[in-house]
Amino acid sequence: MTSRFKLNVFDWTALALVVIGALNWGLVGLAYFVDSAANWNAVNILLDSVPEAEFAVYLLVGLAGIYAVYVAARLAGMGSSEPEMETTERGAPK
Image 1: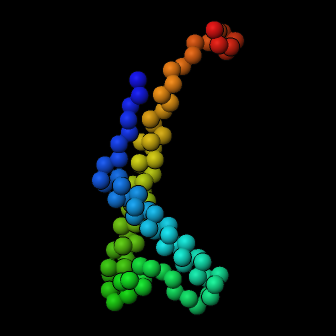
Image 2: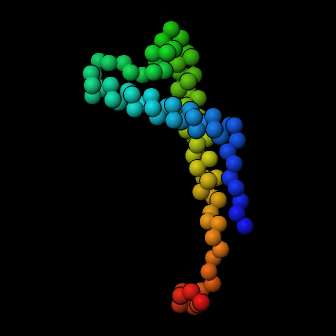
Image 3: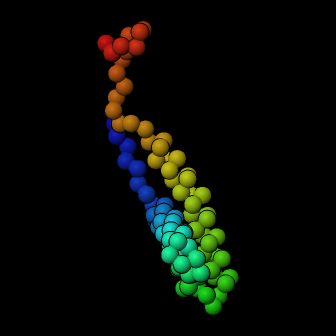
């Protein structure tokens, strides 16, 4: 019996925020090596006039990362859909 794992809207939203956060951190790291004075922080650039909104985005991305750990644990708990083989006392298949 195979059980299907379905991601709901909340799961997809959290995963999208995690990817956005990862890409943003990648840009920040890349900017350092290109020009250490460069600001390639997309969140900072987009929300520069409202620092509270910027930090709210960081908070949401952090919470999404924690939730993504839960989603990964759910995925890992799905297990294998292959039936287990019976073995003899020595561990060899029958």
